[in-house]
Length: 427
View 1: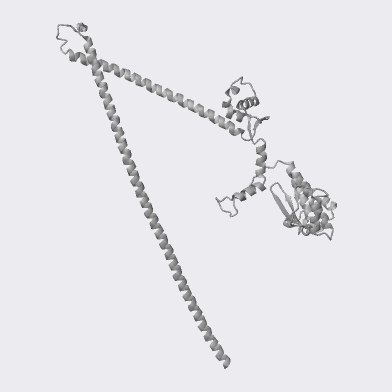
View 2 (view 1 turned 180 degrees about the horizontal axis):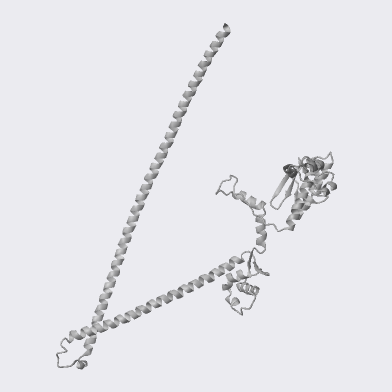
């Protein structure tokens, strides 16, 4: 596209600037003849368009859009040049400001052409700019004006899009997306996506970085990527796909760690409860045996039978009594727990009902207060407007009276002056 534009403007001898200089050399040339010559020369050029309703205009199809030019003043403006002798005289001035306004013209230009036109100078400056750009690697900072009002926090979408389109930003983005818009170095790529293929990283440990990156991408099933000397180049959307799979693996790992941690904590709690229950059961059994022993045999120490002969009695009766006692205690504990849960449920239910009623009352009160405040503010605003209009009417009426009085006073004064003047004239 740039080569086509440069050939259209700067080509010798068939470029637009060359044809303009040629037309300026002939005294009988007009803008109509210049336009007709352009139409004949560039009728097959794809960047040159002839309007249908005009015989002196032409349109250039730039990459940002079509631009229409009017050739009415092209010849006059191109002839508005400075004589070389005057140019050298002013360039040799001792005033730095004047010498800077009229830089010296290269001798090659003055020898090659009979006169230095505006178009020729523009072509020279454009050629110098192109040479400078081709010899360097320029980087641009795009400044976009958000609105034409010069005010903050206002964005005009059409204006911003037009600036981006004319500045070539959208075209650069399109070209970047069509190629490899995303690239990462080998170390960055491996550190970020090594969990996608752990076997590629923890294999032999002697594979180069590019081989490890290739294994990771092959396992993910991606196609169209390129491996460079120091970086990995990915097409549009592939980095987002890799990040999505990485997020899935990290989420799965986090869930596994949480599940294992909760299992360990729950097991430790369960084991502590089991140990506590066993200890409590042991103490309860010992206590029941002690109580039953001394309640059924209160005078065992005074009997003729020694305590060592206690197994001769009916130990089955003692065991059944212990079981009945334990069953009774268990039932009492269960009934207490059921009663506690039922009371808690009823209390919670009543609390929720009371809370809902309180919230409803509060909401109603706030609504009424807001309505009253809104009504009072509206009435105050209406009163202020009425007062303002009434004061304006009073001020306007007073101003009319003053104006009428001033006019009457001036008229009477002028009448008196006229009468005096009339009397003087009569005398």
